[in-house]
Every structure is written in structure tokens, then in C-alpha cells.
Image 1: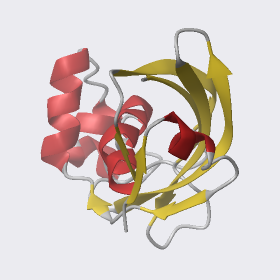
Image 2: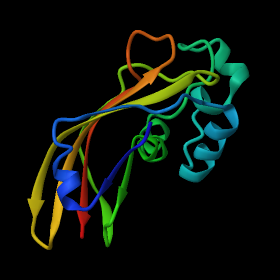
Image 3: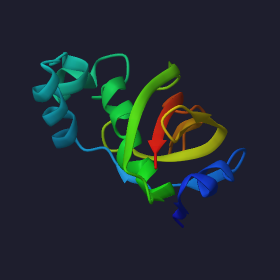
Length: 152
């Protein structure tokens, strides 16, 4: 269920809150190929299913940066921020990819608001701890701390 926060005060009140989980998203070869075209990263472990069958992962895998990019739509399932003039992705403090995402597997996002602090310009900075889980896998696909700024 999506949490709705309207305005800076409601965002500040989220500090320390677990945001729950997004729905599951299947990683298709088409999505991986489209990402490869967009980034010009056509390494065979991503785009050549025949060769990848005999590779280290037993099939093609998603790019780590594709997994990272999917934080955006998955995060939108967790938190709906309203009442802002502008929201920006301010960056990432730490990112790790502990386990590959095999094509055909499903991922979901778990999120927690680590901190919310005031920033100049009538805004707040949110630090969010994200874990991209793989259905049935012991290790996550991605663990990241994201930094967002929201201005009223």
C-alpha cells in the first residue's frame, strides 16, 4: 500500500519509518536489451542468451545500473509525495550489488526512511535505505542509500 505524504511536515514525520515493499516486477530480456541499447552496454552476459547459458550465471542477467534505475518506479509504489514545488534525486551515498538479477526473475523494493532534515530553500533532504529483493534468493540484488530533496 502506498504511503501518501503531503507537505514538508508529513515528510519529516516519516523519519525512521519502514515504507514496506513494492509489488513484484519481472525482469524480461526485452527490458534488459532496451537498457543495453540506451546505455550502449551490450556485454554478452546481458544480451546473448545462448552464450550466457554457459556463462557464470547460467543465463543472461540485468545490468546493475538497470536494477538501480528501477528504484524510481518501484519507490513510487511505496511513497506518494504531494504538495511540493520540486523534488530532485540528489544522489546516492552507497550502492552495492550483492547478487545478480537473472532474466526471468522477479524483484521488489523494500524501503525505509533513514533520516529527514531541513535544507535551505524551504526544503527537506531525505535519506532512504533501499533493498532490491529477488524472489526466492537469499541475497538482495541491490542495497543503496538514496538522497532526495523536496522543496515546498
